[in-house]
Length: 118
Image (cartoon, rainbow, N blue to C red; front, side, top):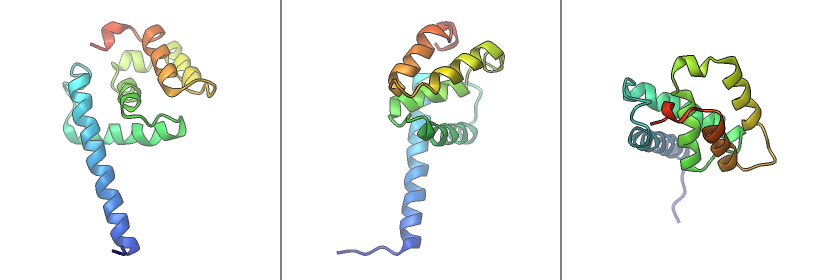
């Protein structure tokens, strides 16, 4: 049996997180090319990383849900900073009695204009 020292395990975990976030960013670019067309890879990975971390608190852990949650961070500035949109998104995301998939579906079906997510 191989035994890893704590510092080796930390290195493995950090490398895994980095590779996973890079893979999520690559998939995000394929799924939402219009939202990230002007975003550098390093910045995109950083935003995705923040969304992964923030999503954990909201029980958003499935890759597809993480991508949709991340799309909110890439919306045009006028939409992201609209008081009504922000209020609705926050209220819906914090509804713990429905699944992450249902919350995100509701947001994209009823709050976010489909023209923003092409």
